[in-house]
Picture 1 (cartoon, rainbow, N blue to C red):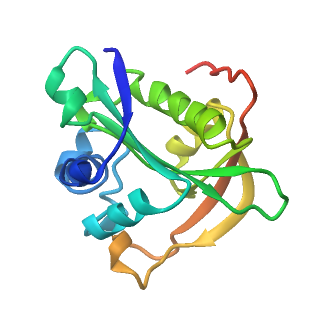
Picture 2 (cartoon, rainbow, N blue to C red):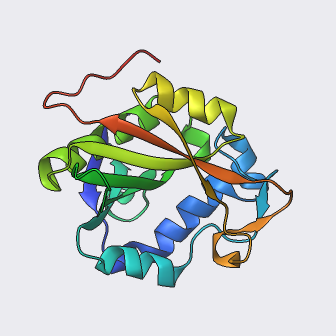
Length: 194
């Protein structure tokens, strides 16, 4: 599959909610390996959160569509990610990466690697950032290892999970927290082996 990329608009909000939910919540998400269904219930994203992301300065939502299917390219995303410029204490121009979703039935085929590489290119070339930063639930060992194989470094910095905010999901267990991962965005990024 050859993905094509574009930036999301407000018209994409319903399709993005469906995609992100299918990748992380409920039984449908269990088809793929990114599911959080054993950790969190409830929603993963809603229309208000997406509108805020789309309207925020220095924030884009990248959509991947299947170049061979006109309907995927225009209205049925097969992958997405949010990239947003954030302030960093050390003065390095930093983009935050999140909402990374691949349709569960397409996971494991390389689309995630391609979308991540494109998101890094957008962060570097479009948003002018020299570093990509993300947070990952720290008990997701397989996912953390996947990012490490792509050059991300576990910083040892942890952030609490927002247990009191159901907009991010309803935890099914105690002790959830996020770990911060960083990657320097070189002028010519090289993807590491799968």
